Length: 220
View (cartoon, rainbow, N blue to C red):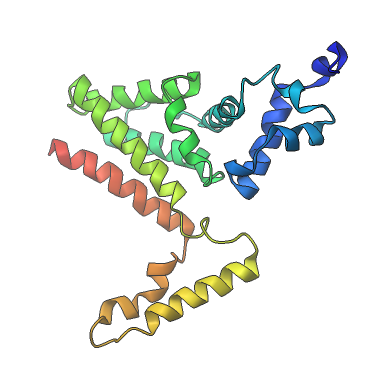
């Protein structure tokens, strides 16, 4: 039986902490009320006092990630420079949670940090010459592209064990390297970079630059 004392000592924020840790390590499918209850020494039913179901808990994880977005202070730089800084802040918050980045998308227009991010992005896009409706469409596609950039991070998609990850990458490089250099000269010479970027920072820098350049290009 769940007592009032048990309910009081179950901190939902700490449950989200635990769920986030599990999901980061094993993916969102690994999150379960039973596993979390065992970690917090309560029965699974105790969690239902704070979360309607697993989807509600995953939404809380998405909210937690969005809460990590540190919005830059507006300044006198061009709208596209400020937009780049804003989107970089968004990606920075997501980079630590590549398996969970897509949990933020349905929460952006619901949770306060997501709304603040959206409002600022729209302000900058309108300043750049877009109509409000076009700014909304451009902003939506930019956010979706950046979430995809994080979820498809080549390093993050590999196994977490360093030795196993390097072995997997070597196999993939060797597979491309074994192709005919006469038929595929550029692919075989770029096998390493095609499989995994040498620098994750450079990977994200290129991705952000492409998104902002594309947005700027529409207006030019």
